Amino acid sequence: MYRTGDLVCRLEDGRLQFLGRTDHQVKVRGYRIELGEIESRIATHPGVIETVVTAREDRADDVRLVAYVRTRSGSLDEDVLRSELQDSLPEYMVPAHFVVLEAFPLTPNAKIDRKALPAPDAAVRETAQSAFVAPESDMQKSVADAYQRILGLSQVGQNDNFFNLGGHSLLAVQLHRDLKASVAPNLTITDIFRFPTVGGLAGHLTDGGRADDRLGEVASRAAKRRAALSARRQALSGNRG
Image 1 (cartoon, rainbow, N blue to C red):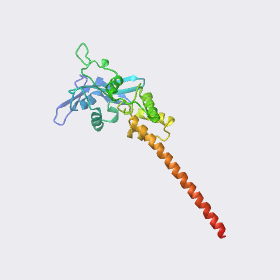
Image 2: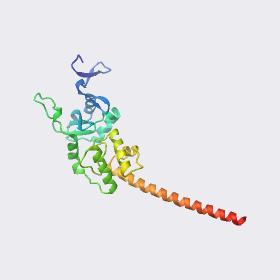
Image 3: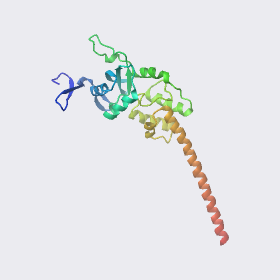
Image 4: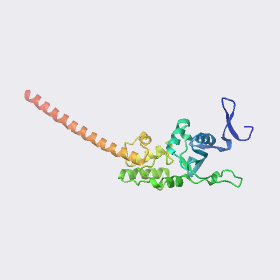
């Protein structure tokens, strides 16, 4: 607006709503995104005092949106906030990580120092460490290992959600390819979205495998019965002749 670099929109009543800065535009997965628009959405969530959204490339060729928030209670129900954002924003604009901070780092000019914000992976694991449940079955371990490879994490537990750990649709395709080639040849991409936790996906794959085995056994027995019945009919037909 007036070449200030501010990005605004005009409301129906004529007022102008500040959305952010044009110099805070980023490109993620081929989409150009205005970070201020995401920040304004998050700011409407009850309990949020302040928020900053950044695009981080902590791994080569993997740019992720990270939302840093200050809340009145010092905690955040990430699932609720993520669901609200999914209802109002495209999937590629929903942050991969939400990090709660007591205070934002500041520059000497008292502005938020975006470069000093902590890496999300460590913060996510630190807050979730108390709830960590190690994978137990072989399938859980295989799924957890795949999550770690795709997401670049050192530790993933039974209850960890692929998308809450930073996964998105493109990474889900990589995960699908990885698991399909190793332990789950019948895995579909839809399964990953339906069962995003390690335990949930492993349970689905394990149960699905048993179900396939049972179906195979039933089909085999049915085929044998049909063959035996056909042989008896042929024998009866021959006797009549």
